[in-house]
Structure formats: C-alpha cells, structure tokens
View 1 (cartoon, rainbow, N blue to C red):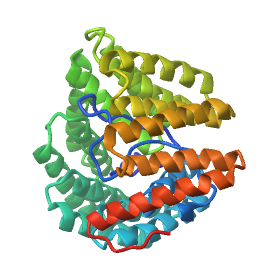
View 2: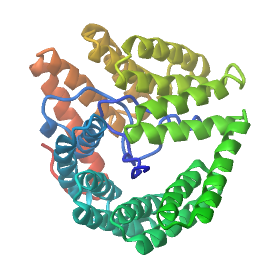
View 3: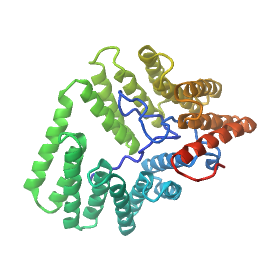
View 4: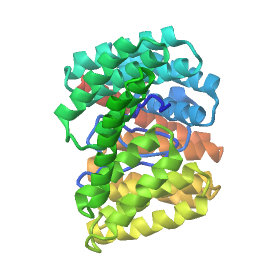
Length: 389
C-alpha cells in the first residue's frame, strides 16, 4: 500500500541536505527563510529557531528513511516543541504534527497519529482556508490512516475532499491528482469496488502519460516539482528518477536554458544523500559553470551553488576548500540580499558550523552571535518578541 505523503518543508533553512530547486523562475524559493544548506552545528541552541526546526525536520527524514523510527520520533518531537514558538497557527507546527503523526502511524499508534493529523488539518484550514494544497495533504494523510484503521466510510470522505481540493486549486492533470487517485483506488479495492478502482487507476495512468508526452519547459518543471516532493519525503531513489527525467527534458530545451543547471543541482543533492560524493561534486561544478554563464557571479542562484559545494566538500573532509566557498557565499549573500537578511544569518551559521568542525570555536562564536542578532531582528519585524541568545 502506498504510504502517507506530505512534503515537510514549507520553508527551507539550515539543513544537512542540498538546496533543491523548485522552479527555474525562482531558483531560491520566496519563503520565510533562507534555503541554503549547511553542516550540522555543534549546538542547536546557538541557532535561530527557524534553522533548528528545519534541521530537526531533515534529521527526522533521514532517520525515517533509514528505518530508525524511534530516533525519528525524537527528532520530530523536538521539532514540534520548537515549532510551537512560531505561533499556534504557524504552518510549521502543522508540518511538525504531520511528520510526528507519520511516525506514530508506522509504530501502530493509530489513535495518536489521528489526533496529530486532525490538529494539523485544523491549523492549515485556519491559516490557508479549506481550499489549499496543504489542507489536501492533511486530508490525504488522514484518509490513508483511516483506511488502515478499517474506517472506510470516513476514509472515503477524506479522499474525496483531498481530490476535490487538488483539482480545484491546481491542474486536474497534475501529478498530485494522480497520487490522490491511486490512494483512493486502494481503498475502493478494499471495499471490493473493483470497477470504480480501475476507473481511478486508469485516470491516474492517463495523467502520468500526459506528463511524459511533452518535452517543453513546463514538463521539465513538473518533474522538478515531483522530484522535490520525493526528496523532501526521503524517497531518494524515486527522486533520482524524477530529476533524471527532468534533466533529459531540460536537454531538449535551449542550450542556455537555466533549467539544465537546476536539474544538475537537484541530482547532486540526491547523490550526496546516497553517498555518491564524486558524482555529486561533478554535477555541482557543472551546474555552477552553467549558472555563471546565465546569471553572472552576483545572483541568488550562485549563492545556492556555492553553499551546496561548500557543504559537499565539508562532508567529504575537504575542509579548507569548504571554508573558501563558505566565505565566498557569505560575501555574496551580503551583496545580493543585504547584511541584515535572513539568508546572511544562515550563511553565518553554516560557516560557524564548519569552524566548529575545525575546533576553531573562538572564531565560530562571534559568527553565531551575529546570526542570532539578525534572526532576532527578523522575528521582531514579523511581530515576534523572543530574545536573542
């Protein structure tokens, strides 16, 4: 049976994975925080709450993908506690509850999982309204759990609601709709409504076929989106397939189309997670050269590339090269975004994490203080009153 689905990251911040590009029009997603990647800091208390939350989420993803369910539970519990600082209706709290619910569901704690899914649904409906993709994901998670619990009538109601939202807010032929249809068909087969199930499965197959037909930029973007969601869900093998398909589609476009660099960057992120460091490095350097040709050296995409390369080198033990790139990325962040931007705070945290790996704690501390000061200012501008550490 297909498992529950919800991409966790509403806003990418400091993490132990590469930045995965969602679209070529905006290679760095316009969200609440910087999508740069970085090494794991020696102490999470030295990080801004947003960065710590994101790191815990990614840590939980990796643990869950590795079958370390108990460890994932601890990470997601910590992320949930941290997310409460953002406000009772913050989408990150809903995301945390969904992630924790998935763990409980895997542990067979269906009642506890259901409570969390319903809390997440209430938060997302309050924040976004009833017709939103996040609400659809909540309903789908709930529907899958209810199916597992044998509450088929309630499950069907949730499946229908999730499907209606995805068809309403997006393209009726979007891959998410196909995903809903496949899950709904599983329930119908349990109810021996085989004819109805086959109809849904046929429609899902048609949607998937349509996605494969076009070699246009839109088709490339669809596969990038699919790969991004699979990556965030920890399904790296399937994410690789989606990004490979996006890469093949990108190669059909103009040789200077920036989508090619985007797909290379995304593939590199998958290869890094799979331990294929040499392949990841080759792709990242190729993407970096393409992005320099398309954007020049002063552009947010170059910041992403530098941070991803710096992270890769840090993970591979090439610490001097990593430091050189983190310095370049930080300088570029300040030039592109301004010295008080959230992206700069995350760049400082990334660099400080590397310095701690090098046991240069005295150098790391002032960078962390400056990062905390910037994060505090950002929270103050957003109406938060938390004090910097």
